[in-house]
Length: 163
Image (tube, rainbow, N blue to C red; front, side):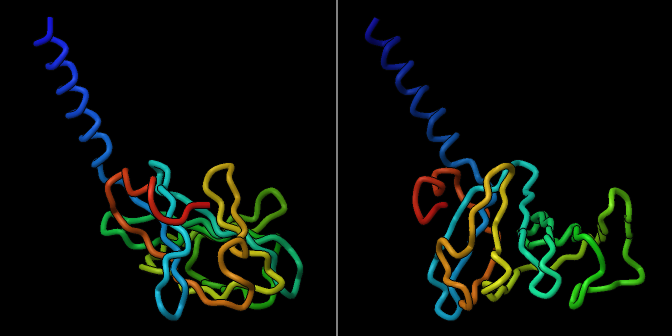
């Protein structure tokens, strides 16, 4: 009987170790300059996340959809907004969708990392599924931040700054 209990306990430890050390992608936000880690969150299996904000001139919502490629670089998949406003990038070769009263620009453009000045008007928010986290929660408006993706063991989600 003791042998079975020990074997079961050993199996549970091995399974837990495998699960906790399984690598997953995390989104990290660091302060610039200096690189202080401000936020680390595990990405969903799709590796998708959104940056949502208010256009500073037109005061209309903008959504930027990102993913992470196989090398850990950020990829801008699409931008979604109400119309082509001031300062919104126009790419004649991009795939445009004007349905539903919105402009959706499909990009699939590898950017590697994203440097951003947290807006004083924009109200930048990081969206992971249904959860939205205001960037001002960990980086004051006017500060600069760096978004990167890191492949780390799942257990890393238990440590470091989260939302």
